[in-house]
Amino acid sequence: MTGIAKKVLLSGVRPTGRSHIGNYFGAMKQFVDLQNAHPEALKYFMIADYHGLNFIQNADELRENIINLAIDYLAIGLDPKKSTIFKQSDVSEHTELAWIFDTITTMPYLMRAHAYKDAEARDKEIVVGTFNYPMLMAADILLYDTTVVPVGKDQKQHVEYARDTALKFNRVFGQTFTLPEPMILEDVAVVPGTDGEKMSKSYGNTIPLFGTDDELRRVVMSIVTDSGSGIPKNVYEIHKLFRDEDELRSLYESARGKYQALKEALLSDIITFLKPMRERRAALEKDKKAISAILKAGGKLASEKASAKMAVVREKIGVSLS
Image 1: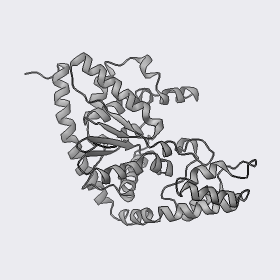
Image 2 (image 1 turned 90 degrees about the horizontal axis):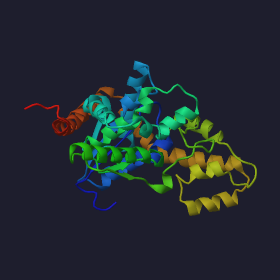
Image 3 (image 1 turned 120 degrees about the vertical axis):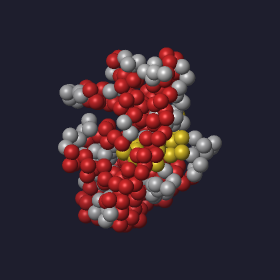
């Protein structure tokens, strides 16, 4: 994306469990690519722990997930000297702005959200946090005058919600918020899981980003295959994330019908690809106090930006008194 310098990027991941290759190729890899390719842009990469509360209601588990995700961020190549790495809960303006957005947002509008529809379709008791998820995400994005949001294809709607909310607030209270744009790499926008569906922790079909060799073997060998064409589609769709597709087609043609051999080739490519990140992660994990310090410093930087923006918002809506 040309002209990204001097712009503002923000994205994040929920700390709801171990990172998987869907998280990496669908979003996290973009974080690192953008960080390194556009040094002049302001970059905010968030651990969305308040969003995570919709899924994790165990304090010890959530704390562990937050630290592990921060380690993952650093292991894949995010650099606190180049980007602001922080956790959402360290910036209280996120929830304050979400409430303000609630007051100009209708229930029918929120009922169009994918997360709400998915929960409804599964006959779940839908918590307010799930229903209101788009407004907290809109606050996450708009607080920082974000112009570019690197997201997976399934998250594009949330950027659209943020744009709609910015437009409505600007119309009601006057020009305040920048309209963000999603950035999606189409060829890796939706990463398939071991069953061919979208890779997701909730579906139990993930390949762990930092799994051991034994874990990776067990998961790769469990990938669902069909018995029709001789080329296992689910294996191939994952494999093309790790190897050039021209080379891959030749491999799959030469090993047509040999599912075990093709899974072994995929396993080998995954292990080779992940090895440097796994080694960095093992080193980082030895000093969790340093990880906490990075998050604290990032939270301070994010708070400075968010506080300044909220001062403008409070003035616009009329709660700031002279």
